[in-house]
Image (cartoon, rainbow, N blue to C red; front, side, top):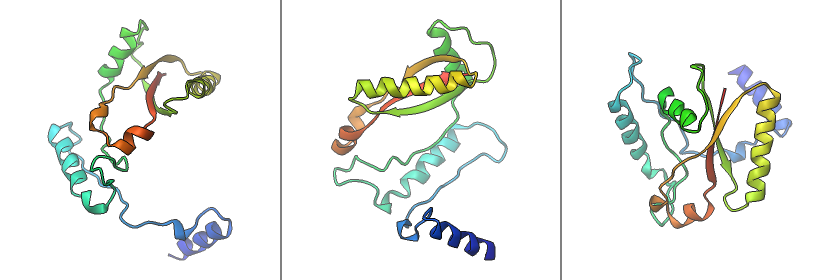
Length: 159
Protein backbone atom coordinates (compact mmCIF):
# COMPACT_ATOMS: atom_id res chain seq x y z
CA UNK A 1 0.00 0.00 0.00
CA UNK A 2 2.93 2.34 0.71
CA UNK A 3 4.27 1.85 -2.80
CA UNK A 4 0.81 2.50 -4.24
CA UNK A 5 0.49 5.78 -2.35
CA UNK A 6 4.04 6.84 -3.25
CA UNK A 7 3.50 6.19 -6.96
CA UNK A 8 0.04 7.73 -6.86
CA UNK A 9 1.52 11.00 -5.60
CA UNK A 10 4.12 10.95 -8.39
CA UNK A 11 1.42 10.40 -10.99
CA UNK A 12 -0.76 13.19 -9.61
CA UNK A 13 2.16 15.63 -9.27
CA UNK A 14 3.31 14.78 -12.79
CA UNK A 15 -0.21 15.51 -14.13
CA UNK A 16 -0.41 11.95 -15.47
CA UNK A 17 -3.30 10.96 -13.23
CA UNK A 18 -6.23 12.97 -11.89
CA UNK A 19 -8.37 11.29 -9.21
CA UNK A 20 -11.24 13.61 -10.14
CA UNK A 21 -11.49 11.75 -13.44
CA UNK A 22 -12.34 8.48 -11.67
CA UNK A 23 -15.84 7.19 -12.25
CA UNK A 24 -17.62 4.48 -10.36
CA UNK A 25 -19.68 1.77 -12.02
CA UNK A 26 -16.84 0.76 -14.30
CA UNK A 27 -15.40 -2.71 -14.26
CA UNK A 28 -14.44 -5.88 -16.00
CA UNK A 29 -16.07 -9.27 -15.82
CA UNK A 30 -14.42 -12.53 -16.72
CA UNK A 31 -16.08 -15.78 -17.73
CA UNK A 32 -13.78 -18.64 -18.70
CA UNK A 33 -13.60 -22.39 -18.92
CA UNK A 34 -11.17 -23.59 -16.27
CA UNK A 35 -10.44 -26.57 -18.53
CA UNK A 36 -9.43 -24.24 -21.36
CA UNK A 37 -12.09 -25.71 -23.65
CA UNK A 38 -14.10 -23.68 -26.14
CA UNK A 39 -17.79 -23.69 -25.39
CA UNK A 40 -20.88 -21.88 -26.60
CA UNK A 41 -22.09 -21.95 -23.00
CA UNK A 42 -19.16 -19.74 -21.94
CA UNK A 43 -20.19 -17.16 -24.56
CA UNK A 44 -23.79 -17.34 -23.34
CA UNK A 45 -22.62 -16.78 -19.75
CA UNK A 46 -20.64 -13.76 -20.95
CA UNK A 47 -23.71 -12.29 -22.62
CA UNK A 48 -25.74 -12.89 -19.46
CA UNK A 49 -23.05 -11.16 -17.38
CA UNK A 50 -23.16 -8.20 -19.74
CA UNK A 51 -26.95 -8.00 -19.46
CA UNK A 52 -26.65 -8.04 -15.67
CA UNK A 53 -24.94 -4.64 -15.65
CA UNK A 54 -27.56 -2.82 -17.74
CA UNK A 55 -28.40 -0.82 -14.60
CA UNK A 56 -25.05 0.92 -14.64
CA UNK A 57 -26.62 3.64 -16.75
CA UNK A 58 -24.57 3.33 -19.90
CA UNK A 59 -27.58 3.39 -22.23
CA UNK A 60 -29.04 6.51 -23.82
CA UNK A 61 -32.71 7.42 -23.59
CA UNK A 62 -33.29 5.88 -27.03
CA UNK A 63 -32.64 2.49 -25.39
CA UNK A 64 -30.21 1.49 -28.13
CA UNK A 65 -27.19 3.77 -27.87
CA UNK A 66 -24.73 2.32 -25.36
CA UNK A 67 -21.18 2.80 -24.20
CA UNK A 68 -19.71 0.06 -26.37
CA UNK A 69 -19.48 -2.56 -23.65
CA UNK A 70 -19.31 -6.05 -25.08
CA UNK A 71 -17.61 -9.39 -25.00
CA UNK A 72 -14.26 -10.49 -26.40
CA UNK A 73 -14.09 -13.95 -27.92
CA UNK A 74 -11.52 -15.89 -29.89
CA UNK A 75 -12.13 -16.18 -33.61
CA UNK A 76 -10.83 -19.27 -35.36
CA UNK A 77 -7.70 -19.03 -37.49
CA UNK A 78 -9.71 -20.79 -40.21
CA UNK A 79 -12.04 -17.78 -40.38
CA UNK A 80 -9.17 -15.43 -41.21
CA UNK A 81 -7.42 -18.03 -43.40
CA UNK A 82 -10.55 -18.06 -45.56
CA UNK A 83 -10.61 -14.24 -45.71
CA UNK A 84 -6.96 -14.23 -46.81
CA UNK A 85 -7.39 -16.90 -49.49
CA UNK A 86 -10.67 -15.45 -50.81
CA UNK A 87 -8.72 -12.26 -51.43
CA UNK A 88 -6.29 -14.17 -53.64
CA UNK A 89 -3.44 -14.34 -51.14
CA UNK A 90 -1.61 -17.47 -50.05
CA UNK A 91 -1.77 -18.30 -46.33
CA UNK A 92 1.51 -19.91 -45.20
CA UNK A 93 0.19 -21.60 -42.05
CA UNK A 94 1.88 -19.14 -39.69
CA UNK A 95 0.50 -16.76 -37.13
CA UNK A 96 -2.19 -14.34 -38.29
CA UNK A 97 -2.39 -10.87 -36.75
CA UNK A 98 -5.57 -8.81 -36.93
CA UNK A 99 -5.77 -5.11 -36.16
CA UNK A 100 -9.18 -3.62 -35.43
CA UNK A 101 -9.12 -0.12 -36.87
CA UNK A 102 -11.71 2.60 -36.24
CA UNK A 103 -11.63 5.22 -38.97
CA UNK A 104 -13.53 8.49 -39.47
CA UNK A 105 -16.64 7.28 -41.26
CA UNK A 106 -17.35 10.08 -43.70
CA UNK A 107 -13.90 11.54 -44.27
CA UNK A 108 -12.42 9.34 -46.99
CA UNK A 109 -9.25 11.40 -47.28
CA UNK A 110 -8.55 10.88 -43.57
CA UNK A 111 -9.36 7.18 -43.92
CA UNK A 112 -6.68 6.83 -46.58
CA UNK A 113 -4.17 8.80 -44.53
CA UNK A 114 -4.81 6.54 -41.52
CA UNK A 115 -4.48 3.38 -43.60
CA UNK A 116 -1.27 4.63 -45.21
CA UNK A 117 0.20 5.41 -41.79
CA UNK A 118 -0.67 1.94 -40.48
CA UNK A 119 0.65 0.20 -43.59
CA UNK A 120 3.88 2.20 -43.48
CA UNK A 121 4.52 1.25 -39.85
CA UNK A 122 3.80 -2.42 -40.47
CA UNK A 123 5.98 -2.62 -43.57
CA UNK A 124 8.79 -0.63 -41.93
CA UNK A 125 8.79 -3.22 -39.15
CA UNK A 126 8.94 -6.15 -41.59
CA UNK A 127 5.33 -7.29 -41.39
CA UNK A 128 3.53 -8.67 -44.42
CA UNK A 129 0.04 -7.30 -45.08
CA UNK A 130 -2.45 -9.84 -46.34
CA UNK A 131 -5.33 -7.41 -46.78
CA UNK A 132 -7.76 -4.89 -45.39
CA UNK A 133 -11.20 -6.22 -44.50
CA UNK A 134 -14.44 -4.31 -44.15
CA UNK A 135 -16.12 -5.52 -40.95
CA UNK A 136 -19.79 -6.33 -41.55
CA UNK A 137 -22.09 -4.48 -39.20
CA UNK A 138 -25.83 -4.45 -38.55
CA UNK A 139 -26.80 -0.78 -38.25
CA UNK A 140 -30.48 -1.60 -37.64
CA UNK A 141 -29.69 -2.35 -33.98
CA UNK A 142 -28.00 1.01 -33.37
CA UNK A 143 -29.61 3.95 -31.64
CA UNK A 144 -29.81 7.33 -33.35
CA UNK A 145 -26.79 8.71 -31.50
CA UNK A 146 -24.71 5.59 -32.07
CA UNK A 147 -25.53 5.59 -35.78
CA UNK A 148 -24.71 9.29 -36.02
CA UNK A 149 -21.20 8.98 -34.65
CA UNK A 150 -20.15 5.41 -35.34
CA UNK A 151 -16.74 4.95 -36.93
CA UNK A 152 -15.90 3.00 -40.06
CA UNK A 153 -14.65 -0.34 -38.72
CA UNK A 154 -12.04 -2.23 -40.71
CA UNK A 155 -9.49 -4.91 -39.99
CA UNK A 156 -5.97 -5.16 -41.27
CA UNK A 157 -4.84 -8.77 -41.54
CA UNK A 158 -1.09 -9.26 -41.50
CA UNK A 159 1.81 -11.46 -40.38
